[in-house]
Length: 123
Image (tube, rainbow, N blue to C red; front, side, top):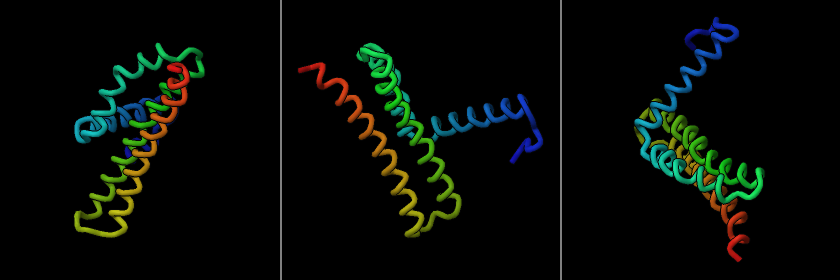
């Protein structure tokens, strides 16, 4: 790892730079991540507006933010699996499928949270 000897604020600054490189790479290379980010743009203000309490707002927005976080992890797993080899391998396929299932689960979680908070307001 680069800059292993960095300490204190210097380490934090390097870590921030690496994180920004990761966001940029995922945004440029992963269509699903871009779609999720573009959905956040209108949904975060809507969540702030629809939540009646700070806890509701936190749940509405937090459930949305989990989706791109899990997508980042999914993309990292896929990149590592692809680095090992592009030939078909049962364990590689399983790793990718499980990571994809995690993304799907995070989307379902967001939908459930939004439904549980917003459906009672409609009736």
